[in-house]
Length: 172
Image (cartoon, rainbow, N blue to C red; front, side):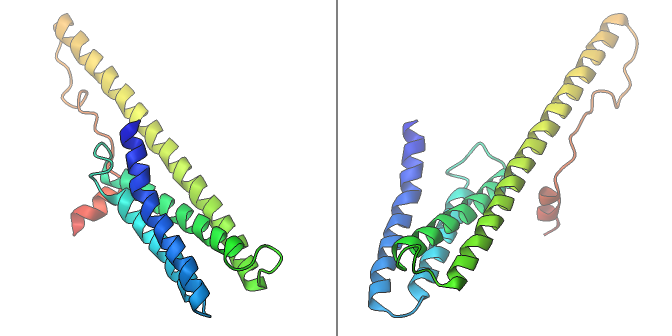
């Protein structure tokens, strides 16, 4: 649990500092550039953090990438909403464009979350399916050895299909 808290602090501290710096810069400049840079920087930091293999050594590349995209979009959304609410002037003074952007991004975040959890469930289901097939073929192989008959060569070779992400990374 302690290492998990350290990981969260490693991610949260830079984002908090960037948001604070964006708030101070917003007071100095009369443009929306500080808010834009703040949201983008928070998303990029989050993406890089979750993509780094050192933070999640037991995860494969595809899982880390999926996690990084989902986390970056969620953090960008949270930073954007907090900036809109706390730095622009509250919900009564939001410009129509900001309201529309937040509404659209809220829908987008919902779709990303649904896709993330849906794909995670699918991947887990496929792993269980192939694990069960491997156990079955292994037990059939053991039974055929004890009964004296020969097992078919393909019966013990249950290999799960590789994902599209793994295939595309090999082509490079």
